[in-house]
Image 1 (cartoon, one colour):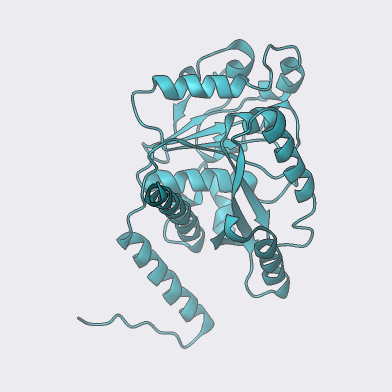
Image 2: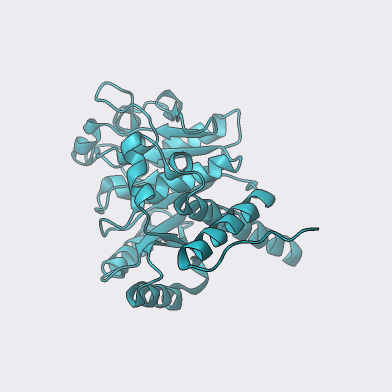
Length: 304
């Protein structure tokens, strides 16, 4: 069998050769689907860390791998809805109607043009006032969880992943996301002050665990905006791995122009630049998350 040869005489050539090998590895590996619905809230109280970008690209990566995925856009800015190409003008039924007026979640979900397996419950401008309106609601912290559980129980299809994109502040919308989820997914940018505010977020998670959702767990940390040419990025990565060990994915998301450009075209980087380093990195992160869960499940069965 003939071995494929690549020109590696320059840094750019080596980078392109590495990317091609990574694409081939992804093509040859099946991504295992979970045997239950995994519900993530993607959160970081520090802004500008790639939270929404990570939410939509991880969701699109899993959908491309064959999973049925729902994104719940809890951020009043509606950036996740925009990136998924889902209409979210003021007259569109949205998450606001679910939280405030008890609409079934199935009434507001739209299919994303990204992928037939990718869906979104959009945010609209009305969600900006939901923080105040939720104060007087019965079971105000549990409204999203109640709606999501009812939706999943009545669904004819199997939903493999739910990603909840929440605002950067800790208000009732974010609390609803934490209560509805089982897993917390934290993107951390590889820049100065990366760990700033993280202790506050971890404290918030502990409070939610203690008082509202004992099954909530921080399971996944993804390093974003990584530039391996700088000492700072590598130092931040080392610090995060030292603090959180096995919860940090080995895959990192590089700083890439295409990732930033994609939302302006109503797309994720998975479809906007499918062969690029950004798409490949998110697909690798999805595969790593899926394999970790599969391995963990097999270990539990072996112990039983």
